Structures are given as C-alpha cells and as structure tokens.
Image (cartoon, rainbow, N blue to C red; front, side, top):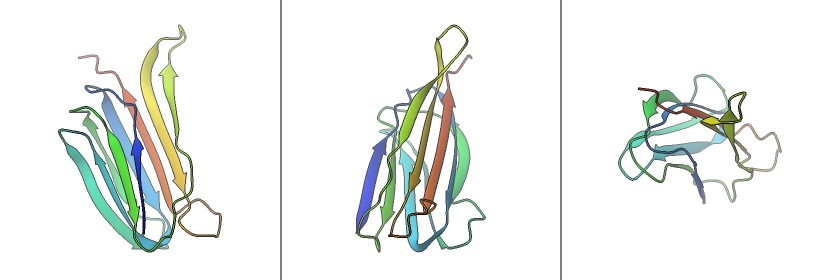
Amino acid sequence: MANRTYALQIPKGYYMSWFIITQAGYKVDAVLRDNKTEYFHKWKQSRTIAPPLAQGYSFVEGDSLELVIDVKESKQLKGAPHSSDILNDSGDIVGKEFTLCIEDSDDQDYNDVAVSVFAWKNRG
C-alpha cells in the first residue's frame, strides 16, 4: 500500500485552482485539504487519461494545505513535487505553484498521477 502526503506552501486567503489527471491501472485516491476545508476527495481507476480526476478552484480557507495520494495496490509512489513562487517583474511574490508527476509502478512514464495547482494573492 502506497500513501503519500505532500505539503503545499500556499497561504490562507490565496485563490487557487487545481487540475489533476491520472492514467493508471491502479485505483488512485486523492484528497486536497487543510485544517478547515476538504476541497475535493476523488478517485479514479482508468488507463484512459480523460476525463481529469479532479479540477476546480477555491479560496484557501485554512492552514496546512496538503494533498494526499493513496494507491493501495502500489508498493511505492515515486516522484518529487516542485513548488515555486510566482514573481512579478519587481521580484515580489504574487502567487504560488505546485506540480507533481507520480509513478506508481515500474514503467517509468510518470503519468499515473499528474498534479498542477496555481494560487494567487486575493486582491479583494
């Protein structure tokens, strides 16, 4: 059983959007949550990439935003997340991004789970 939790360094109050696809023979269960809100809890088992596992948007309601990926049939989940700041021309942080591509077996295609999350400061 393989289960990994990834911390997303996106602050409370940011407006985020997510897009998550899978192309896997195993069932992929994914949850995006923080200490106040569960933004989605979805699963999919299909070698067909469409439709996406999850897509949506929300303001970040709480602290400790995290993504949990659970693939019970897999022995391990491989892949390193990438996070960075979105900067304006002056070098000020205006947003955050988080991407991740996961391999759940041995075929090395890293398309079993692909995650893209972008978030910006709320100007309101």
